[in-house]
Image (tube, rainbow, N blue to C red; front, top):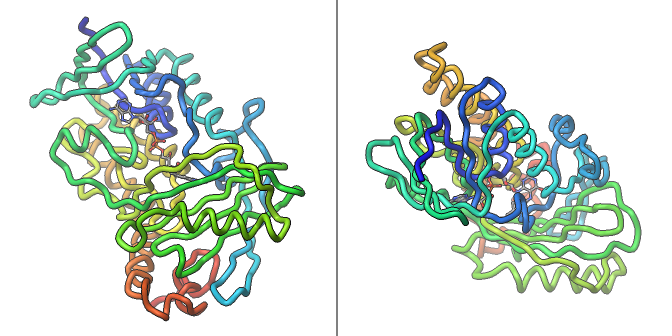
Length: 356
Ligand SMILES: Cc1cc2nc3c(=O)[nH]c(=O)nc-3n(C[C@H](O)[C@H](O)[C@H](O)COP(=O)(O)OP(=O)(O)OC[C@H]3O[C@@H](n4cnc5c(N)ncnc54)[C@H](O)[C@@H]3O)c2cc1C
């Protein structure tokens, strides 16, 4: 089968959902393909979003609880509380709501459908669907296909540097209003987190593969410690994990008529691993750029997309990359156990924002 569209969106995470919605709202013919059978399932996320994203989390059942602040634990055992307001969400519901809105605005959504090939001319894509192979003829493609972007690989672009994570959902003995994070030489290139969702919490950990083979050992140890302290239940209700890009933006966010958004663009924060907000913003901007370009309203729309993303995100990403490189010198050395070193590498501390 052959289908002609204006915009082909690959991936229906927050970036793809936002891109499909923005392009469909303007009346473009949009197809969005997602290889999962159910959008957002299984969840691979700690499910925290910053407050500015609240308007996307208003649907029934999506908001799980409000977060007031963050407690950061240091290697010495010391801890510090900081204001860090946000929301805990049902991440699957979040992604589904965005995609559903795109569908309601006319985007055609293809689930259980995997992009399997792109032609050299940049005008058609092979997608394997349950109904068979579909050849999409497109004018513009939005690559919102996550950290291991197939689109990027097909275009011969480099893989993104990532950290590896594991996460358990565990019962909480009592409701908490802060997120908690642990900085430790045991979590090289990453950190551990406990994000509360009512009487359950997402307890997870990320590490850089160069310094630690697998986050599971450290995660099990932290889980055991919290159980002994009576701060978490023994049961593991769900297990998940995944890769988080930590190397900053791709060299180019626009390759011909392909726009990269969200994790596929390398927009995740290299220190915190947060990427939902950047995915929604960049997806929306990609959809708007598609509209401006394809409708002939702005010849430079694609270049402007790249410039706007860089203006908006580069400063914060660059600082995070510098801090990440700074910490990188200390992993595996005694200095990684010093609070002073860890404070400079974590967003909740004033030292993080000091100039060198
Ligand atoms: C364990 C963990 C915890 C996290 N916690 C947080 C958090 O609390 N807060 C936060 O802000 N960020 C968090 N992040 C990061 C956040 O999840 C990502 O930044 C976010 O999902 C990026 O959205 P995206 O739409 O760019 O990519 P994704 O959400 O990865 O979506 C990409 C989609 O593309 C689909 N896809 C891939 N290849 C193909 C193909 N060939 N054909 C069709 N479809 C394809 C995938 O199935 C997927 O649905 C976490 C990440 C992990 C791994």
